[in-house]
Image 1 (cartoon, rainbow, N blue to C red):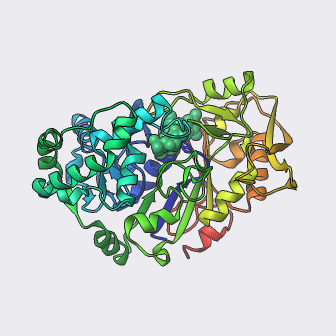
Image 2 (image 1 turned 45 degrees about the horizontal axis):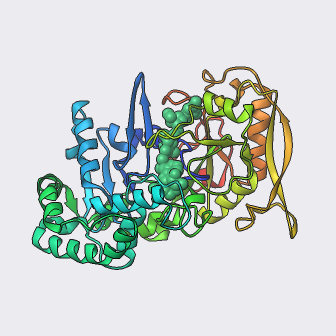
Length: 444
Ligand code: GDP
Ligand code: IMO
Ligand code: MG
């Protein structure tokens, strides 16, 4: 198996960064294909912690080339500050980073518009965005007037495009109480940033294809999560990109037949940051305990994440729309200390009971729960399923059988070592004792 998509199965923050970092020990290339600095992927190595927002989570691996592909929206200032941070840590990212000439540029007024929409409430429903300019930048892309990274090579052309964008946004900005910015000022600020980014620019689709043709190990790193996908998520409370697995093809320019497997990252409970329906949300002491034990505070914005029970109809939905071939369950250790664990298995809706996710009825749907026994033992030392207490095993078994997707990995802590591997995405054969799975079989 040489090409794997890693995708969040819920509302983001499932632990994708940890799993990508873990799985890329032998990877040749990691590709971010969607989103921008709204992502916050946490990498923990020993006592060191690093949060990457634009740069792929493979960057800690010296042999791994990291691609920011054309499905992304990139804030040049954020990219360079992340690179500087990595440089300070002695990681020399510039030698391994490649930025697509077709990725779109987030400009300062995108951030202003995103922020004003959120703070004034004048831009439709308050979504609780990350205020990083994501929505407005994708709006310019869809309107076919966006500025692409490759155009940083010709700042006079970039200036013309920026003027067009400003003209198009002027009525919106005035309605939000802001004056349109001056294109010259923006170009002046871009100039030194562009000079540093230009050497990293390439046509990345062919580079990825080249790596795949050489049977190199390529990982596509999803950002956000399936339920935040603009097509498949809880619209309109979504982000503006194709966060699900299909986005890996659209956002990086490889065909679907090039993808060998899709690993879905499932947090052992649910979280959501920002607005929108969340039927299994817990606003009581149990929810607070999950937040405290799981350190559920946004890695980009610091906002407290909303917490709740695991939603199995959601995981089945994510399995279907992503074509998941394996599951990696994260943060199982956070469930330690609960007498019982509830899991949503179905929904009661005005149209009756369903085991599917009633995605457009989540506001009026009531979760139907199954209660499983909890466990009190800490799990962070577990390195095999056999090391887990029986009730933790039973929780995983129930998740695996109800989702219909084989379990591939279990994460029991933020560190690399705190991982149970059943089938490793890049291992040529299943690990000893691993279950046979559709995911594992596809490697043979
Ligand atoms: P991402 O956006 O999907 O990469 O996830 P985030 O990095 O935003 O949030 C996941 C958080 O959980 C980070 O602080 C990780 O260090 C942490 N984490 C990841 N896996 C585990 C785990 O198995 N157990 C615990 N306790 N923390 C984890
Ligand atoms: P990672 O990759 C969790 C949420 C925001 C908001 C909605 C739209 O770390 O899992 P946006 O700024 O994208 O326009 O906000 O999407 N959101 C995330 N929630 N994890 C993320 O990324 C997110 N990226 C966006 O909170 O509800
Ligand atoms: Mg995150």
